[in-house]
Length: 167
Ligand SMILES: *[C@@H]1O[C@H](CO)[C@@H](O)[C@H](O)[C@H]1NC(C)=O
Image (tube, rainbow, N blue to C red):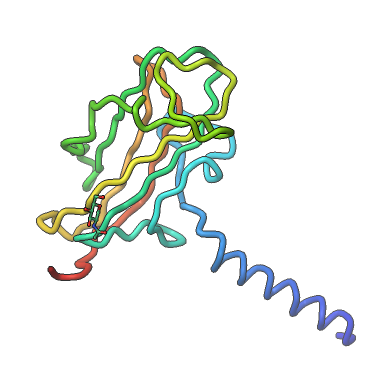
């Protein structure tokens, strides 16, 4: 290889490594039967690893969704469960609750109330604790924001509950 090529090669490798380390992309996947555009750009779970989200006990997890409804949104309901070995377990305290109160306009950061006008970008944020009594297991998180039967945005992500810090 000429020196020029070597420099280019090294630069490309660096760029790939840096983007892997600093992008913090959430490895979100489509829910069964759904196909949202740019899903990985719309979902952020923190903390999260590159291939699955590590959820330490006694810590708070932040979930951010960006969505742009094409029709007026009458109401939004959280549908959240953990699939453990193929069995869906509802996330008590979040599953079935109203999600409108967690939504802001993306451009002004103003809180909004349902019904939401269509064609706007919205941001939904939720923070929830990983309780110390949760079992340390592999699971698949399924999170859907529903307006009636319709899904506004939905993702699934492989996750693991880890021991975390003791209190
Ligand atoms: C999680 O958030 C709650 C409510 O904001 C806060 O009281 C608590 O200290 C947080 N826990 C951790 C581990 O950051």
